Image (cartoon, rainbow, N blue to C red; front, side, top):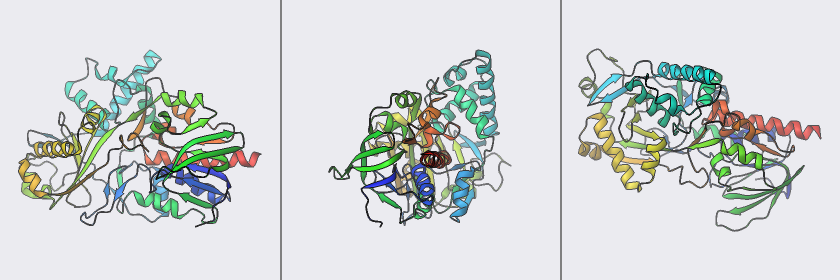
Length: 449
């Protein structure tokens, strides 16, 4: 470990994907830096469990790579990580029958095109709920889209910006493939950390940033340790702030002098909440040929195993397997309002309701599921003081908020994180890209002085 210095060139606040991406770039440029992280681990909202009972890593936070995101694939390739493409089979579960969902992403694309046209006619933003309540929308499609908005976006439809949703789809392209990292999402952040120049970089865990005092060309950070003790202040020429937007919005890190422009930007970004639970069974009974034969119509998806199941109206409406790997893991997911309702319940009740929902969706007696269940895991990101939610989405009228949040202040304060990347908000790819962008901004600022 390098010797602790009283003053460095850059402080990086947060050791998630954005902070570590920025730190790696800056340390390789010859700058001295200190990375501070409130948790006793790196990774932020990437939380991978390596349970010896489970055949695969268990992801309680970020799990999928959405599309062939160049930022994420660049790290995966450099780290020589095995990336698996998901089969892409989506089915609807109803009354114990599984039927193909059809063109899953095509339905989403149609919504985004409709949103773009409607905004073009009106000339102003509108909540997605206004579109969903339109009388011409078929009831089945409306139910599907409501589940998608609540689940995938983790959003309240009445708060979600229709303009931002349409623009994200346009800017992000229409690549709908999904991937996962075989060795676990945490392999990405481990590679970033391991690539820090040890002569120029120090990573301090269990270090909670509280007050960032600044003036052009100088910052002082007041922190507390994991035990609550006040630590010696950290000083630098600049700071890169990568804390989740919900943490910044709550004022957990105080800026002195204050940054009213950043508070206005934060007000345009909403916090998405999710409930995710991973169940480990003694065996993958859903892979049995008889199990699928009795639930699928003749000739449907012959030879294909389960991937994604959607059950409108269920307390946990979305479930997925470990496909393409064959493992006795099932993951349940719900976002938005229904997630908030579940998260308000005691942990034991959340597990009980998850098993009950799965039993109904799979048409398996609950007692049989309970007998097969070997272990389970979940993490409440809303109650986590260092995240205060799962990920961000743009509120109505907040289209410029991510750019405003990302804008540097006086060549001294720089901001990164998925919430600063409007086109890829809520993703690891967005966080990585924002970290690289913030590092470039720091280097331009320092070299111009």
